[in-house]
Image 1 (cartoon, rainbow, N blue to C red):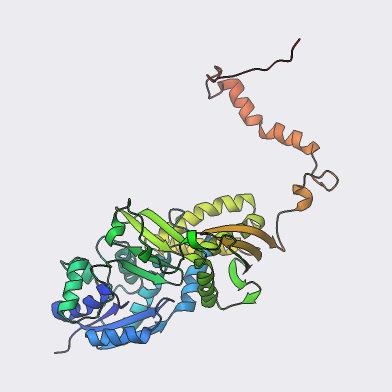
Image 2 (image 1 turned 180 degrees about the horizontal axis):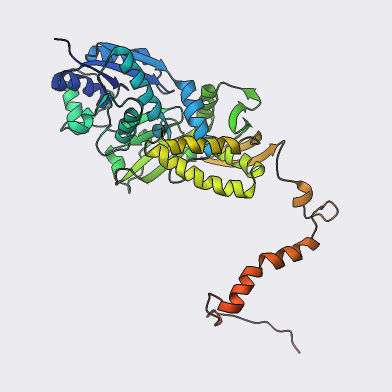
Length: 417
């Protein structure tokens, strides 16, 4: 009797390694794995071999670094989207791409189901399930970690009992996900938000207190909102992000300690390392500051928050995110130029920005009357009209604030005589 096939998104970590054996033993599937190289899998072939050794009948490897950066990270950068104003969405952005790869392999291999290693408490289960349902509703979605009655210590014991090689230990029980756009770390001692992260949590970033006080400077060039060059050198997208991760991380840039609101309704303490994303978001915002009009910039902030929510909640393939992408693209036509940033002691500082179509005009901004082209006499009429609605309202309805003097301590100095 031919067994049904299931395609598992396989990272080589604890959860998915145990999942291979569990899917075979408990659900009777013939397991096929797919490992997507998104920039933090140095030897995908060894990961694939581990899958085969654990029981998979075939193991697919995909180099998805460029498409990940160009089709997922850079559009989100152009949107200026950070979840809760903090998280660059690295893991969340990878999930719709991996879901699409799962669907592609499942159809190619004649599988009836896809599987992932997400828990029942996290956001990733929603992202995988919803994306798969949108792309291939005919496929079943299996979530072993959500279904089995094991915690991480029990998984480690299960792996040891079955001879499964896994990177996690009881002493280092972190759950880690990483790609070019960022590295996320949770679980273990990090579950106490009062406890400072230990040094072994960080891999990409140097302790800021030990880095060179003078730091370093880098110039980032953008074309229509997309990074194209570092210090005048044109680089492929995946290489530009990788190089910037190394350079910024060496100066302690990109550490994020965030207690965030998960979609499933709980708060979770997450540690992130995102050197390149942190720098690029700061540089992109600086360039937009001189190229976007005030009303577009203000409205775009609301779009950024909504984009971040949609990505975080697993709705990348939804109609609203697609529609917002059209708006974001329209806002980026003139976001072309260069930004100089200083990286020092874990901080990103904007040192300069320039753009051919910059809306910043020195002859309007200057306070030097000899160079000033601003018509100061026009200000009086502008203020008169701008304040008219407020004056009308207060004269008829009264001021909204109490008219009594503020109860504060005052001193008055008078000239003698």
